Length: 529
Image (cartoon, rainbow, N blue to C red; front, side, top):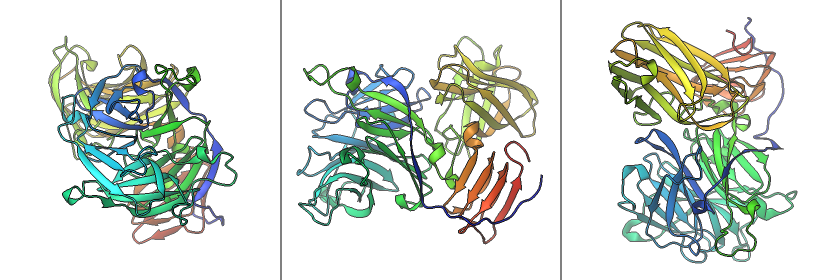
């Protein structure tokens, strides 16, 4: 082990590379979701699952309904909500930090009518078939030249709408090779009037080498839970924007990947690096002669971590792994026939499981995180800190949804002193799109068990061959390990950062240690130090 600090001269553009990527097909969607043009991944505290809510697009063919599914059973609609509103062309669904949903009625069929965004409470805040309230956010573009939009995200009280098609014959200042990003408030204008959208940014998304420009227009978008990564979707390309500051979406690192041509329309993040996306189909029950099995709607999975700037990479597959949110992702399971009982509370980074009575097995009472995608052939690492009021045993299991197949199991002793535990396993079973991770404490003694700093990571993400740091890191405490080389051309500000590479660390123009930053670099590689 030796401390290393040296500089090699190199440069890295904000736009790194583009390559062709295949993603995994989860399967065909049911007829109720033939043209899924908007989707959101929403936690349901009543069952502990994250569910995928979607809507179709054109009102001529569909009622104003939203439907939910789970990825292990995509042909079964879990719940349907009737918005009971007039609409023309639903194209996108967005969500805010309070789980309010926004649906954009602003597609090409709307033009030249006024575009609308509908806002209503998240589906888990009510039990009825229709939302208790639906607000109408009317807006207009500052130019008549925006003729189509299919993309929207929510951030800090505003909606950001990305144009799909613009008409320079109407407004010569508009370029059809660009997407124009407009910003509006996330609430209706006073008196029910129209907001005038503000032009926030522009970006060229169609290039001279793109043979069919229509396949590269922006049709879907999603923000990661930590608001540091955005995926922009087109039919043949996905843009990955990472490490941007606030709503300067194109101000961070830009990567693109090429994908097989399909009518991709909706995208949503599972965590800060994995996405699910959809492909529209066509209705085969209305006599459409173009409908065949290749046109059926589908849903796919893709892990974006190789294309995210190392300055903001978060490899944790768990939502709320840091336990800073009291009601997100984690639920308490009690095995009914057992006597095991207790309660769970989560606050300020600590999960507290109060075991009030015990059963005959640890799994009879457990804290679990559901809706995890575990891929065949990949190696994963589970890490957490655990302790209890008294020394005891506990176990950790990663299971199929119904508990019939165990993908990983570990049992060990914990004490009254917080201790970090780490466990690796390789997934040798078929890929599972709805697994759960559980911490099992239902046996031994009735007392309190504590957990914190929980993570489930793919080892290749936590320890890749190389990693690139291209945008500033501010107020961060992190250690980054790679098997080969770390390349850094970004400033470290008010941070405590360790780089640990197997072969070398390259500190390039742009690297700077600022203010009270502590920086260490090692040649040791993954798993050492």
